[in-house]
Length: 309
Ligand code: RIB
Ligand code: CA
Image (cartoon, rainbow, N blue to C red):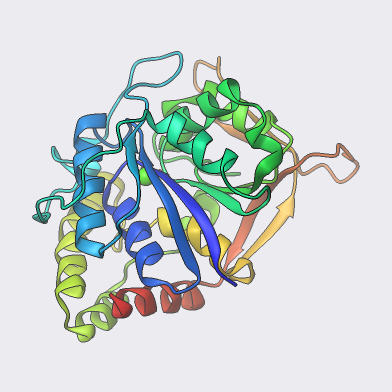
């Protein structure tokens, strides 16, 4: 069944892999791409999004959103994604112009112009645009099919001991997203840390032997080095496409319906996504947490999509 999605992203090496998955998988209809300050500045991630869409042959509306979080300054991550936000590769000159709307307005317009329940939101960076869209047009909450976001974690952080990068960057926006009464699935580090681009995975991609597969291998060459140097990963976790895989084939993940709150004040815990697993808690939360991943089927999905491009 074809799923219509809006990708909100901060490309970013793993955002790039999610965009390629979206472009190459026959069951995904990308309705819009919006960008947000995160891995790199808004200007850089937007330039990267235009280049990636051109490379992937995705001719869809692309709009730049918020350059900074709702209530705090942006802190980028050049140590992981480089100065360009997509170090290691050269992108083609964009064949499309940027949509003149603000990214938040493109999100709202796309949802409000579509049949209720037909659009899934796939945030892959800080949740600034999503939080702002809910504040500006609360009606989108009842019209969105579901939100599948990459971020957070039950038991591990990467930006701090307690917090994952996307959530730490904008915990206030995250709180708006988790508090709204729509179905949200937190696809966090508990599962994305297992979605690693191992040598076996990279060999399968190299064997495709296409311009896109060569691009991916170049993309991963930089990402391998930065993740090894910064986080001691022998093989880099490819976080973002897992959130989209959840929309394409929800059976790839095990999810549990659990309450989630976000710390916004803690000296050591700001950005922490606190999941309440107490068995007697019966709150009718609409938040879900990804707890397990079928890594083999995940990579089959991604590699199959790359082979289609
Ligand atoms: O913590 C991983 C997340 O932060 C991914 O979305 C990556 O692209 C960065 O934005
Ligand atoms: Ca990202």
